[in-house]
Amino acid sequence: MSVVSGTLQSPMQSPPLPGDGGRLPRGGASIVQQGGAESRADLLFALLARGAAIFILIMLGALVLVLTTAAMPSITAFKAHFLASSSWRPNEREVVMRDAKGNIMRDADGEEVTVTLPPEFGALPVIYGTVVSSIIALFVAVPLSIGASLFIVRIGPRIGLLLGPISFLIEFLAAIPSIAYGIWGLFVLAPFLQDHLEPALNAVAGKVFFLRMFHSDQGLTGRDMLCAGLILAVMILPIITSLGRDVLRAVPRVQIEGSLALGATWWQSCQVMLRYGRTGLFGAIMLGLARAAGETMAVAMVIGNANRISSSLFAPAQTMSSLLANEFAEASSNIQRSALVEVALILLVMSLLFNVIARYMIVGRSARPAV
Image (cartoon, rainbow, N blue to C red; front, top):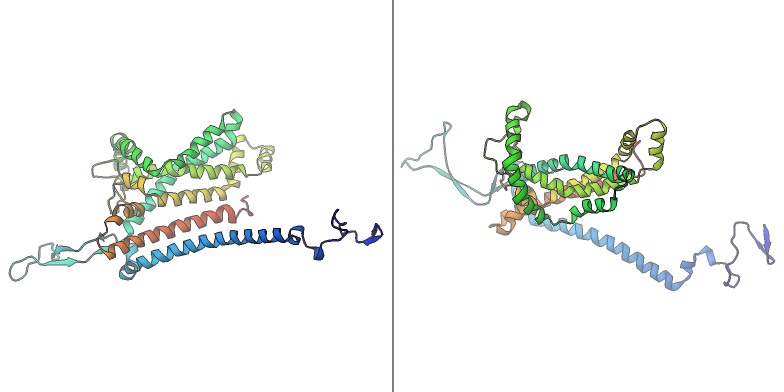
């Protein structure tokens, strides 16, 4: 207990502030809570912040609702078969009936027996094209991105290089429009692959037993799955590099110095950094995967736009995004438009899933670092 100016005070109680008339705030309220104008401003700011967050969620829910409603005719008509079917037939088609031996069937008058096939839609080829092209992009971009991140964080400062321009140029790749990547891929990368790289790779794949599935017996055009994967790799490289750089910079200094003190080499200490930040690096890779799965124009210009499944990387294919870009404006029936919207809904769910996983790996587990 202490006595200040004749007033008995507790040791834990603060003295009155100068200019407050010797009175303490009522009920222990803060200064902000005492001021009416400040309190109203804080309340308004809190309402605006919460309203903005809720509005974004409402927008996302409205988007899912609109796509689901528009895709309902296709969902009702094809059900789960839509995900497993390889047929994409926008219009009715007459086909000639054949018997078990392959002979054309004829009626009593000698006319060919035909049957009219209704429109049918299946998303399996475009799902396959999206997955394979994204995997190719990750296979190329991930080693380059992690290597560039290590260079920026650890190697560059040691050798005295200007890291500012290097980091800027890598991040500048993300600002280049996708149409520019598509034009470069169509007029530069695709001819290079067709004339120089793919013939050699295709020949090797045809001679090696376990690579035979990647061999193509058709003519090589350069506009195929491999070209699309390489374009996507260039496009997602700055995303993974930027996030990977931030993850490695967040590694505590004590982890690196501790490994060096225990006798680790300089490169082994880099491995410690990668091991410590592997959760965040995986999240960065997942964000790059989401970008690769949703890319449209650049892929549509170089992938060949063939709606079929082929194990060869040198065969034309199609992704969900390229299918939407090529056919949505020219859809001739309601069921075709509904099927295209269902493809868009599948792509939205895939991208949302990738981002949720990445967000969880980067932020949700930040309090539980890998050791």
